[in-house]
Image 1 (cartoon, helix red, strand yellow):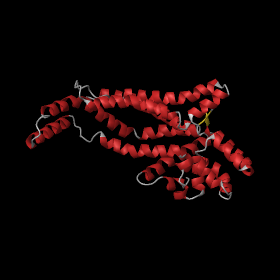
Image 2: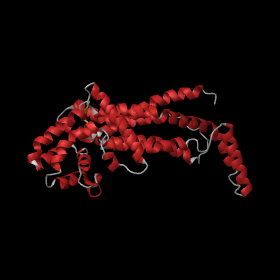
Image 3: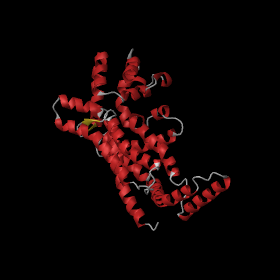
Image 4: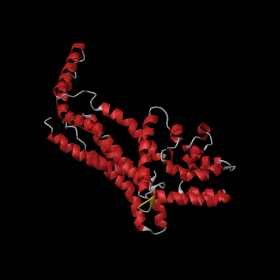
Length: 332
């Protein structure tokens, strides 16, 4: 595994990213046994494996959500009963009655938070792995290594990389090393590779060889996963390639629709009938806005991240259908 993970991820995310990167690396190596060198397919299988591993936490969280839909009307009655009584005795009585409801359903006030708190660092680390695959997949890193070894000895390349990727790679903190250079090159768009070949004509042959190898890894259904859907749409519109134009447009659309479907399948809290129930209203708004935001952001993010969002939402939706069926059979 590449050691770039050690320079890019710190704090609580570091162990999670290392473990997830280990899984990603071995999925890629497994596909290579069958002669498949494709990053997008690796991302899809990686998403499937991670979601399967997280099933116990997902079931626990959804079970609490189902319980909450039954408990909420009773909890709201207790809150309404004591809403105008702020003395210490009343507050203790309210806490006791609230706890009695949780005990009745065998639940805990923190029952829904704990699984989520465990999942959050895993999800953040997942994004780190998807965003920086060469840091975790040795075979992908090896494609960059010959070119990077030359770049490190060529004057002006550090400034060019820094100008091209902006603040996405902090060369002052990381130093101009092979790992930081690979980190920068992985963020290159096709136009950036062309610009570098023009800037350093002596390296054009090696640059062409590197991009050729990357194309074999990065193309999925005719799209370069390092490109954004918007860039792919513009390029294919100019080339009158309408099939690939539609494929590029489908990535953000499917990312939004699949996440919307996932939110619809999740257990919903019971309606309280209270027009002032701001929490319930906020949840409904968030369930509508978040898929729309995902679709909008996906236009400018790499296609690979969009594929991850779609695969993750589809897998979670299938899981949710099975979990819902399991919870419906439970004598809650």
